[in-house]
Image (tube, rainbow, N blue to C red; front, side, top):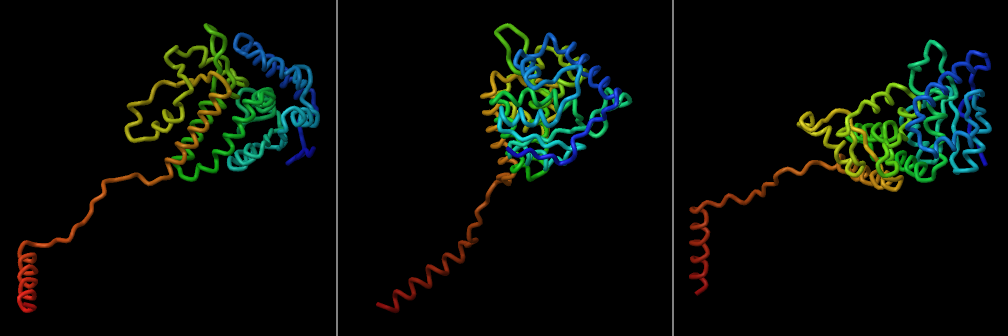
Length: 284
């Protein structure tokens, strides 16, 4: 087993960091107690992620690799978008090792931090279906070679891996698997206030999101939609559809084709016919 550390795993050992972690952990668990899937609760315990101890990067990396085959890439700051997707395609997950400070409590600068990545990605990575889908998302990056394709990939990633929901038992409310819903209070409050009409089946999401960039998309846009997957298999199938939509954005639009025909006038045809008759008479 090879563990890669792109930067030295770091979270300050000062008591303030432990306090920030504990406060973040307690707040989010209190908000999620009616929403969280039982699988996430069990995964947190299996990973040793708890309120009273900062995560141990080495222990986390070893456990995740043993359970899933994925490699954790600890970095001091979020990596570039292209590098992030390329890592996912190789079954490698960049994890920011920096923990926010008190002054950054609600809005860590520059993107995700240790809390976001540890609680928003790692528990789900223990579920094979989610892990496979995350790799598919990374592989889709290779098709995002135009501005339209890149925009579609970003919209799909946010609608699913950031704000996605998984169907629960019949009659039960959908349960979040998106990172933003699992780690930040704002998105979870917005979900709690959402109307039933804002919950959409995941099937067809790639096509729906592709249309948002089309001319006249403002007429199709709805209030923030939450896509509900019935299973990880359905998420995988929709990622396959996403690849088709990404490929379609790279093909030139088919316009009307005109076939130019020789412009032969009636006079020209008559002259050609007369010349042909004359030649035949000469042969006779």
